Length: 146
Image 1 (tube, rainbow, N blue to C red):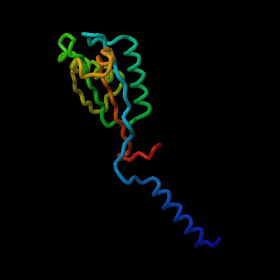
Image 2 (cartoon, rainbow, N blue to C red):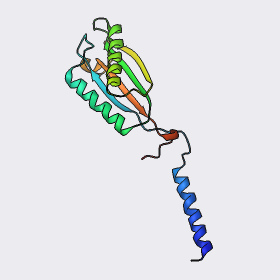
Image 3 (tube, rainbow, N blue to C red):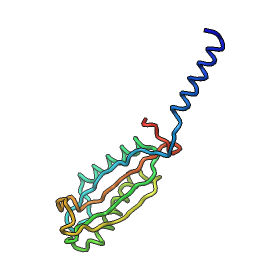
Image 4 (cartoon, helix red, strand yellow):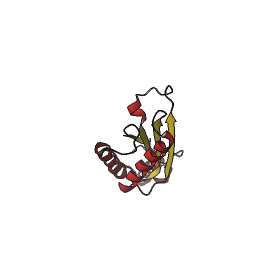
């Protein structure tokens, strides 16, 4: 193989490698979800739910060092005592716990929702929760699937 052919092959290989690393559009990884469940009329978190959330938070910090946003939605049933307060309390307690577990460098989006008695297809114990979703990011908003 001649010197020119080697240089040409190296150039083509280099260009292919650059193209494989380039990102054609902004893209990030899929969201990572967990639900934190509560007893009826309560915003207190049971020990098993605390442990579940702590483990999830540690995993998220290790797996996804870049974090775009953490969304938390507090939910309550309409039939619960003071459901508007409960949705706020549930979302805020989830946020506080996640921050204590080290998810502090990410913007938070906190909201609440009350489910109507006949509007939900889920059993009541599944409605009383905080829905949590971490949107992981990638360097330069370009994930290559790795």
